[in-house]
Image (cartoon, rainbow, N blue to C red):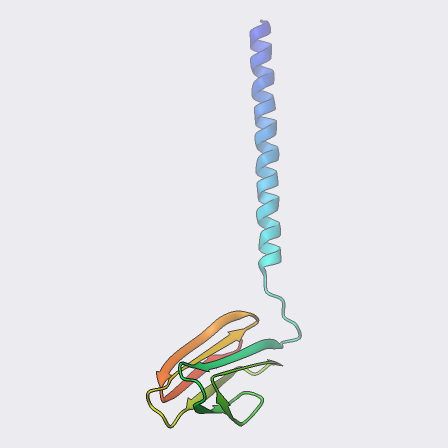
Length: 128
């Protein structure tokens, strides 16, 4: 009789532990889901533009939908701004067609678009 009582108590404890573990797991999944939702900071996004080339001291002209309408750079350029725009582009042009140009666009810290080209490059991107 004592063995049966011990067996019943053991089974009851196992089920109680399993129930609390499943409740804990469900709670963790719920909170992860809540905190993984993106925040809408009044509709604005942080945009970071990076442009670089494989050739030093060669002028590259940047044009497009970023805070400056046109800009001449050499080697490397980076700019960060906040916006609520929906879609825009960046063009890069160099007279030397052997120069490899790379444009990277980060939205809220994540790489959104990347383009690589010789002499001329256009990268279109959606900000939202």
